[in-house]
Image 1 (cartoon, helix red, strand yellow):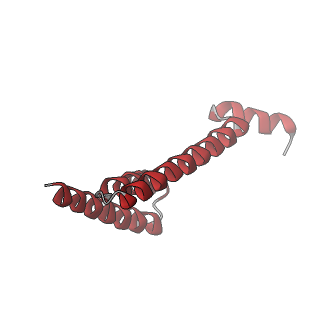
Image 2: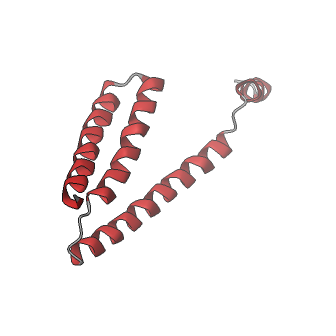
Image 3: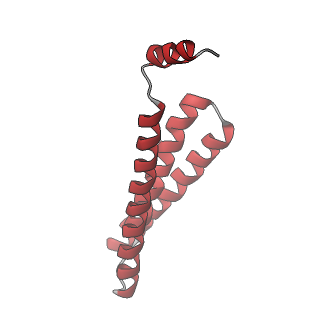
Length: 102
């Protein structure tokens, strides 16, 4: 492919591969930080003998909604199954938390 053809295709897509890479890396690091904080809070809640289902439901709901959105874009069956499974587990954590706090 010629250089001009490649540049024109990027211009037409209104996409910048460098920015996309930066956004993806930032999302991954942000998610990792969120999971680490949730783990610390969960450990504290276990130590203090507090219910901790809410902290499990948070990342699972993120993963579930992320998977459903990705499935809409790619139509990958594995992604749909992953979204359903994480959704059910997240709901179970939330229901367990509510039952524990009643």
